[in-house]
Length: 140
Image (cartoon, rainbow, N blue to C red; front, side, top):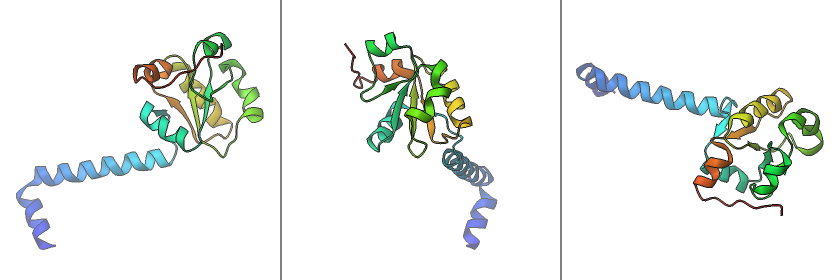
């Protein structure tokens, strides 16, 4: 144990950098567990979908029909507050998507205020999903 303090005294930049990185990792993990994280990458979204997360598409019906994530349900952003309790389960993770990720962040805020603490936005929206060549289905 004494050698650790000796090393830290001889290499203060390395020691302080290591402590700073450890604090960043701890902060990130605690923030994610506390629900502070609101946007997910496509890869993280796929992991949640594989574990049974609900996918909610907040675009209008026309855009939804043109292409959406498999098993996504369509609830336009304007109707989300009214329809959430009828169509969503608070016990499940919810991934909210739109075209670019901007409207879905606002929709996540609405859901979290309504008690859906495990709701997340897809970072970059359906455009990012398509850029990763992930599957999209049409309603036609």
